[in-house]
Length: 324
Image 1: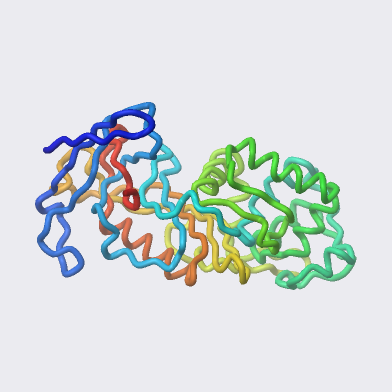
Image 2: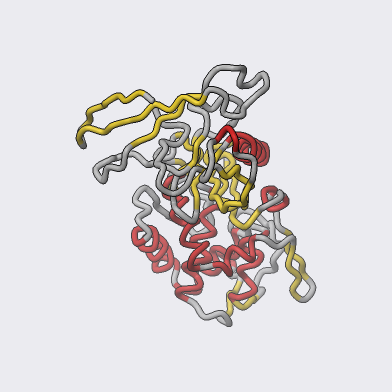
């Protein structure tokens, strides 16, 4: 093991360059060369994120169209894979997860949500609602999250007072320390609804820990109420291990995704990576922004995690793939 030192604004950090001669990776994508991974000694002043996950030093074999992505462990909070995670992008209908969260804060479950003329005139008709239709909030959340109804996003905000509702969305983002996140509407139609992959992981963590009912809705294939059935339009929800989330699309945002997956990861915490074979399911947030193909990108990420990422225990502190 060789030691090298780097200096920065926050002081001197000592890195260990770990050379894994075999690492258990074979095939054309990897060849016979050693995989290089940086390990960092604990330092409270470090400005970068570290992880408990080990993976090759370059994203060889990981082909994604997304302009930004982040994979993070929901239990320990460590980052696994990342690229442009601090870059700001429009998030489209991923917005509706915050809409659902704030709606549950401000309104009672039996609060009548009315599809007003203004709400009904909102672009999109994915939920096939009728002008003047009334749903209790507890029901309205299903077409909001499954069919991504823009009508109901506006109708919910109107019920609480639209300006107040949007202000509360931004206050909640601030409380969650989503400092690069901003909302101007409850649907995500506006390109001014923006965030970063790093911020959206914080929302995923909060929903997992504090609002499991919202995630439970997003796992459903469909939901029937009286004469209507709303189907889940999120392709990621059909994938193995999906635990919840929301997708989105607008011309400005392209395809976006906040999702949570249970992924089988090779557990090398008690042995050498070379010898590790046993896998354990780990709950990971998968965030994609500005993707050309959300479903394919997600599949490629999950496959990469399954095949090439090792868990080495909570105290290892590896710099995740994607950092420089």
